[in-house]
Length: 137
Image (cartoon, rainbow, N blue to C red; front, side):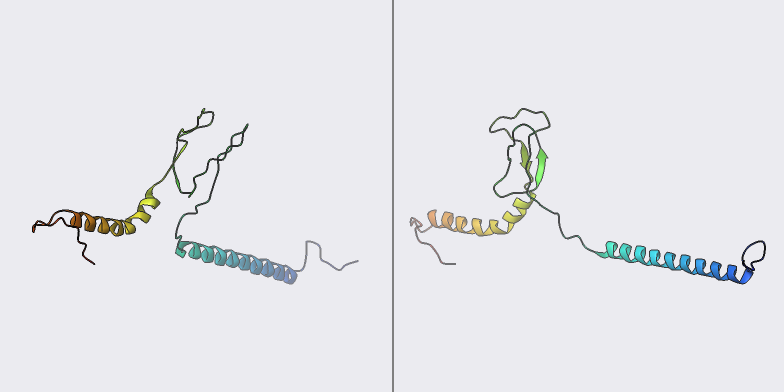
């Protein structure tokens, strides 16, 4: 038989159990705090540089039809809804042209400069010539 006193464990043993529980609770809170502050700090400072663009297709339940643009793009507007009857040639999806315009902007001066040179060379000059001579850039 044990020599334990009536009414529970000895006071010294009770104190060490409380200290152990207190230590483990504080340790758990510190770990959670470090994780929250660390992940929150990382999430607030990381830069998201762009959107995720992925190829896709629209699937019809009865007949599988692939709707696909040859070069891809970002969907700007969906004009067909569930249950709509579409025919060949109907516009189902309109692609957003923001990326296309942004890609075209740097090449626009390279296209317009030769056109201006041709127009300038083809118009008659003030000296009365036909304007068929081209100047080198």
